[in-house]
Length: 201
Image (cartoon, rainbow, N blue to C red; front, top):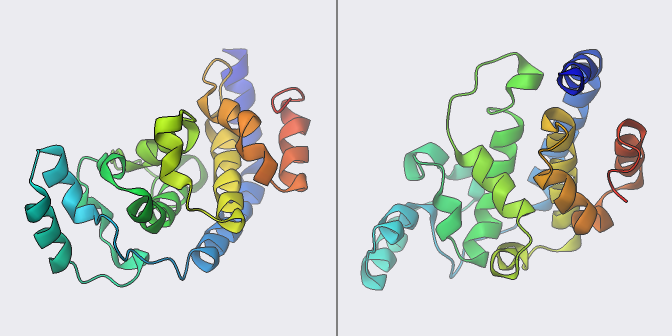
């Protein structure tokens, strides 16, 4: 209970700074991922049919019908109503759609920063799960990311850690410490260490 109260008080006192960091990160995600395309990769519209066992031919037909040229044009909730569509993408499709999911999680899904109700969409949890599960079968999702894109991911997870970390719920903390910390800017490392001194070591 003390840990939860400490966590809530810290966010309340630091909300404006966290909002500013969030807004800067959103801008950086847009810039760093701006030229990413989906050429040859799975589209989000294919993921529900893939989950239902659709044939390759059916999926390719659906893919050919998609008109988006940029990841920010994709309607996430229309094409991924369950929020689990990311799990059915290939690495090309994942790199293309991941920035939209991260931005959605930082803005639409961020009730702690913006005093709003979460809309219940599960995509925010899915992107965090896939970026924090470091098993070899899952980290292939982001093996196409370059270093700048990985830095955006590390900063995204650092903000999620600050907003939602409660001792005993360690997925994000473990992923940062075991892998993403190498891409995390020094000022973010320093900030996390000032709150949880041993978390990244």
